[in-house]
Length: 481
Image 1 (cartoon, rainbow, N blue to C red):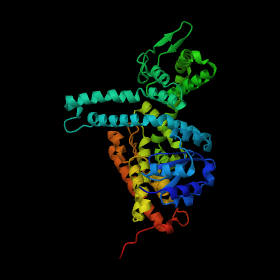
Image 2: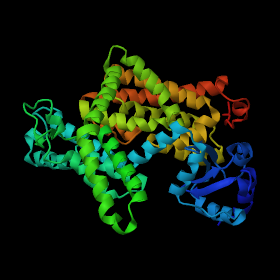
Image 3: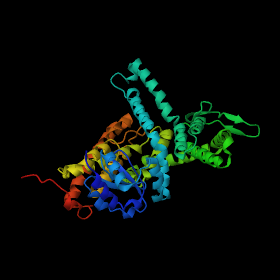
Image 4: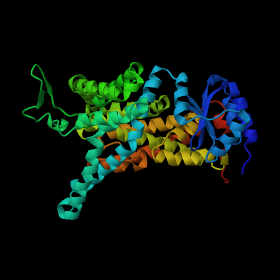
């Protein structure tokens, strides 16, 4: 077993001592610190510690990449520092002291949608598979039209697809109550009231000749469902959570079990169907229509170039989390999203830039402990290790990835590449692409692989976009002539 005592002592010293640590935790590969004074950390010296493979700051946390041995390192650090760890949720709460208002808002958005992503990814894969078996005409027709078995499979899979997308508001309202620390079952019930079979399905509103309603004599309330709608569910979820929090401050404990759930849920459902639902639906349509117009209008190539280029910087700020809500609204309104394919392409571009660094710096075993896993994770849709561990460190690979992603985004929007849903980012993203866009998406993937790789090699050789000393010190292996 490796002895990390010296490295742990050095990290404690260079991070500013125990008094500079507000909270510390660890995940699978990284130490996560919330620092009272982030500027007091000597990043250069920290990255020179043998056990450290890189550092980055995200969402108010200073993160030190250790690798798979982080549990052992964490134990050694706890001994020398005297600091007891906290849970990741507690660390996130403490990290808010280092975040501005926008960063906090984006962090909240991320915490709402992150628990939903596995289900949404599954749903996207199911829709993609159903498109293949029922939408592609082979020599004798579609797979479904030629096989009762696959017809049954197609029908059965829609049971899952409908549960994920049509009933998405249930997941959103549950996730909000979970994040806010309020009663989660109330969130689930609230979500169900937005998608109940008693209501006119949201997809049938446009073609309905008559809208059903609740008749209260003096007034009526339309019985309209909010299937797949994101913003109405978010508004209702936050009203429920804040109303419950407020009620618990004023209602005596001995009657809170009865009074709080009743007075929190019933008014929220009423407000959701009279005020929040219609307003949220309108806002959601405005947002999706504006984005869709940008993605499909005469200047869609410019929108694609702009979004593809700037998506990676958005990841650094945390603002990229808002794209989940926009994607889901596009899916609800237009049956697919042409925003998400560019996100998958951006992930691929970042991975390709790292791949070029692996090629250029082959033989640097310490860097390869970060760069090789980072490239793999990028191609599978997780970009942070690559961006913070390699690309931002050298700058020029990050710029190369942005350019490659921008060109791929331009091509994707020019040819209106559309996905069924959010899917697995990176190379597996083609599984979520609609069948008629599949060929062009593969072309875009090739662009996102080749362009960043070649530009990274070029930028290093020409010493472009690099902080002083980085390229000169890069351990490039010279081949023998």
